[in-house]
Image (cartoon, rainbow, N blue to C red; front, side):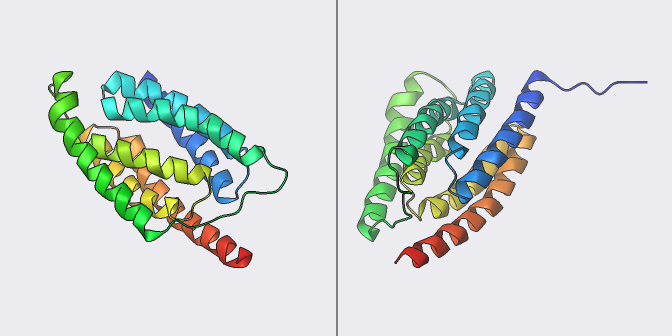
Length: 192
């Protein structure tokens, strides 16, 4: 009988799927344990993207690893639960404009010095994921809206990179992000 061989990268992708689904489940529930699963998923993802040489994703997963520790700290530092809150519209305008400008600058004037394969989608996703993750750590409702867009863009990137399991995960993340937005919005309205 032929055995099914699973590559090292595919094994890591499966571990990422499991740990990130647990991360999202507990994040939606606003349970601090989410940050432990986020930390593990980030480490596994870091190895995958190093192998695939997606520079933006490598940087992003180093950031995710650090943010998992930061998120655990922020959520656990006070005796009372951190409440869901909102950002003013001007913050979004500033962040989106800055993100577009930085993508252009990094792609055309910085990263092209280190690699011949500059992927602007990768760079853009990376920059906006920094913002969305920071917003998550501070329970800012619109983090989920950013994630909906970022997950769909990541799905495209991962399909282009032949990371099919990751692409499927991004589809699932999009659905979870919608669910997370609705759950946190309900929590926000209950606290007002």
